[in-house]
Length: 337
Image (cartoon, rainbow, N blue to C red; front, top):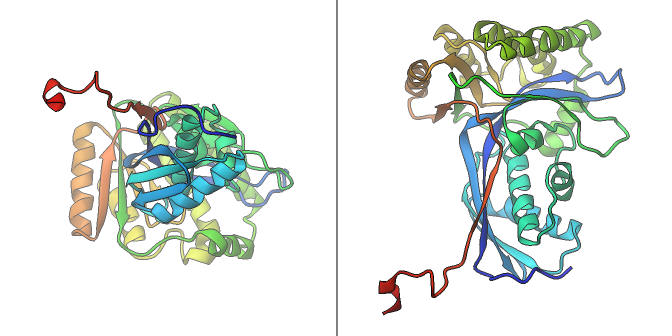
C-alpha cells in the first residue's frame, strides 16, 4: 500500500490517559473465559505523541525504542510500504501498573492509521499493535474512558475481550494516583511465568468477586454512592490481591505500595488499591478540596520518592487531532518579509 497524498509536514497528534486496573474477574477459566477485569482511565499521567509520514520508521523522544517497535508492527500488519516518524513528547512510566505499553501501542497505531486513512481503531488497532493478549482494560479505556468491565478471553480465541459495561464516574469524584519509586511490576515473559505458577483461586471467591461487581460496585456507581462503591472496590482488591499473593508476597506489593494503600484508607479515601502489579496505587474521594488534600498528604509521605497525580476520572478516551502544515497564506505577515 502506498502512502496517501498529503504534505509530509502534516502531523497527527494523539494524547491518551493512563489506565488503572482495579481487579481481575477469573483466574480459573472454568466457564470458558480467562481473566476478565475491571478498570478505568486514570486522571494522570498522560501520554502524548505526534507522527508524520516518512520513508522509513524514525522515532525520537521518550520510550522511543518501544514506539519504533509498535510502528513497525502496525505498518507490517497493514502491509504498508511507507514509513512514519514518531515523536513521543510525553511517555507513561513503564511497568508501574498504568498500562504504558498498551497505551503507547494504541496511540502509535491510531496515528499510523490516521496518516494512512485506514479508519481502524478499537479491536483492529489492538490486533495491529499486538496488544490485548490478556487484558482488554487498557484498550477499552483508551477508546472512551470511564469505568470499564470486560468479559475475558476464550483460550482458543484471538479476539479482543468483549466490553460488558462502560459507565462514567460522577463529576465530583476525585482519584489520587501515586507511583512510588520502588521498582517495577512484572511484565512480558516474567508475568506469563508468574501467572502460570499461581494456584487457581477458590471457586467461591471467584463467584464472590462477580457478585460484588454486579450487585454492589456497578449499582453504587449508577447511584453515585461513593461510600458503597469504595467499600466494594476495596473488598474486591483484598480478595483478588490474595490470588496474587504467592507471586508478589502479599495482598499488595510490599514496601511503599502496601504502606500507601493502608495510609490512604486512613486518610479518608473511599476505595483504595493497587493497579495491576503496582507499584502504582490509587484512592478515591469526593470533591476537589478532598482530592487536593489527599494528594498533598500522599506527596508528603513519598517525600519526593515518586509521583502523584489527581483529578476527575476522564469520561473520554484518547484525543486525536491534526496539525496542519504551515503554508504561505497561513503565515503571519512578518514571516514573509
